[in-house]
Image (cartoon, rainbow, N blue to C red; front, side, top):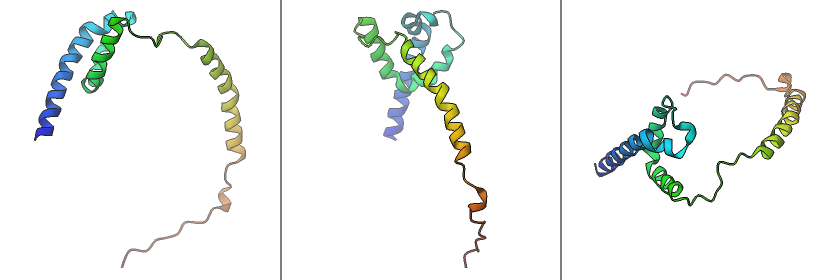
Length: 116
């Protein structure tokens, strides 16, 4: 019973944070989300579960303590990955087709008996 009460109050607090985050905070954190009201309700289930992390992250970002440079686009890494995938995917498909198992080598099905 105590565990259910703790979970209930945790979700109540998550609901309060979700309302605050969806209506106010997401627009301040991300300028791309300022006028994007359609996707905001989709965030509510996640905010209900990880609301302490969201509060901590909002606090860190508003204080200006974020040293991770998270919003810089990793273009060079993306270009390298694209080149690798251009060659890797056809190579994997060719190897998969060439090395596939011959069905004639497989054992036939065995009929199991019912337990006695």
